[in-house]
Amino acid sequence: MTLKDTWNNQYNGDRVSALKDDNLFRMEVEAIVETCKQLINECPEKTIINILELGSGSGELIRQLEKNFISLEIEIKFVGVDFSENAVSLARESSSKNQQFFCSDFLSYLQSIGPCLFDLVVTQRSIMALMAREEQEGLLNEIYRILVPDGFGVFSECFQADLEVFNEMRTMSGLPAIDKVWHSRYLDEEMLSNVFDGVSYNHFCATYMLITRIIYPFFQDPVHNQKIHDLASLLPNSGSTSFLKLATVRKN
Image (tube, rainbow, N blue to C red; front, side, top):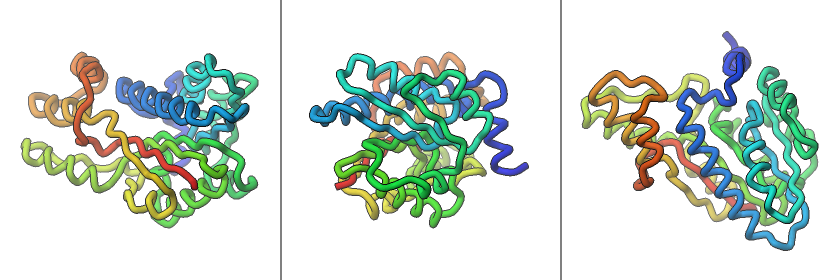
């Protein structure tokens, strides 16, 4: 099965996300939305905001962003890019007049457009979908190029160093290490700091991951979307015990 087949299969049926953990997907969307709202509020002089999502899937994140931005007195336009035909088809079925979706690989799309076009670029585990470091670095440089001056990136991605720390805790608990998803390459923090200024991180699901990926499987074989996941998603977040985290970057 090819990588493209894998992603197309993720969007067979009516699922809005390729992520099987429903609570984690909701928490991720909420963290991205809240971060984007804060960033937009820092730009009161703008009358139009252009937002690009790389790896837009079914368009669920863009729909949630638009829903939460209705109260803002500003026009916001969205572009979503995904290389899964199934995902783009689902996104277009529910798109609004301010949303456009394109079926393309990320680099090809970015290289086809001019510089300084977007105020904000968001990703949900999309940069890590590129399998080679040089491809990821090329993508980050292209994102920098198409951002306006003082534009932002909000990237929800998995990071290799954090996975290694997390697996050390699993080993201490007598659990096997978590392998990265086969069709991905987890990021290195220096890749972001080499391109962008003012990189900051939000471990938005640290408590959730500790409970659902260490404490829960310590007692029994884990299954997605159980009551313990619901409980873990409601508890206050604390710490930095997650390899999935939100990176906010800025182009100066």
